[in-house]
Length: 120
Image 1 (cartoon, rainbow, N blue to C red):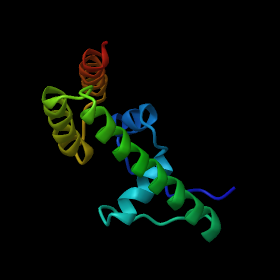
Image 2: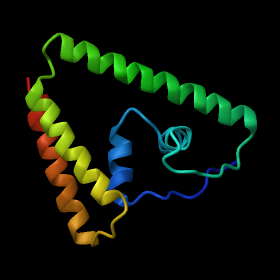
Image 3: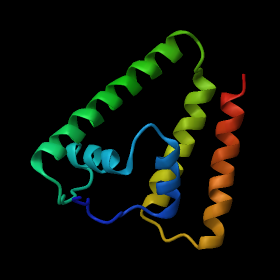
């Protein structure tokens, strides 16, 4: 079986990817397609383009879901603020060297905030 290039993501990013709708391969493809991060792949062209299609489809479904949830009032401006703040922290974290003992604390904070937001 062919492999993608070794993960360039730190532990926190990998944990968030595991909890997301996307696989690590799909995130790498999306970053590549959006020209955010170039990756080299050692998979067949057919497998790569199949992954591209799956990634685009999931991304479109994510956008439709966000539009629907905002339109129905499930997601509100407070949720947007929490998402924006967490996203900004991820931008800072993604290229940083984090001490292993801090990684768990950071994930605990992220998980706590998300649990608070999805409480119904």
